[in-house]
Image 1 (cartoon, helix red, strand yellow):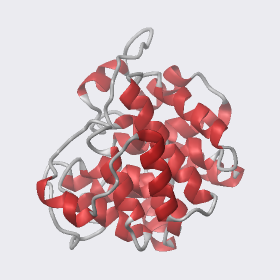
Image 2 (cartoon, helix red, strand yellow):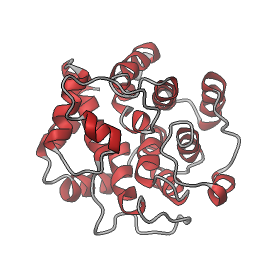
Image 3 (cartoon, one colour):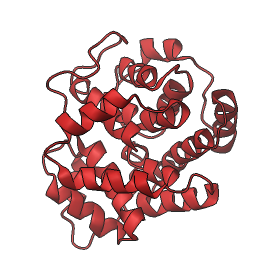
Image 4 (tube, helix red, strand yellow):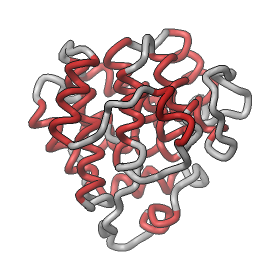
Length: 257
């Protein structure tokens, strides 16, 4: 979960100004948490407390406005009653990591939780698939499986092409907010990484939807490599310091595992 949030923060300044290099300041001064972090914490709260998914997601997003919510989702936040809108955007995958971390020993339960928090908005088959693939990859990593095995399973189960390297993806990659155009690439960035930091740098360097790519790759890399203590400390003490409600949920989630 923190893997998604830290990735989101690191990638936040490159969404509007994409880059095609891994050589950049990991935490720049204008970095901030975006909608990706808010939605990830909302998912954790929903699953930890068994709360109504749609209404709880709306409440969290209303409490943290102006965080870069997408057009359709931004309107959905205020819908009464909230109804899914057949989205296949990558928001389905960037927010779903708590489903895996809270059910790491039970893949079936993790995928069921993924569906529960995804179908409230992203009920298109590609949206459901993107969230499930991300959840599945995190679960496998948490269970000790290595990148080669995870790549094989995800490609087989979800039909994603994971054959390209990061260097092969980067030159022609462009800004794409669909699950089908960003989840395979983000998973590749995580599975090709040597560390958590390397995974996030891979994702941002593609020059696409940087914060969301990093928020998808980040929790997979967290499960594979762990997160450096200094990254967690900086995220919590600087970038999340004015969001104590988010910090409370993050602490509860990791204590519950």
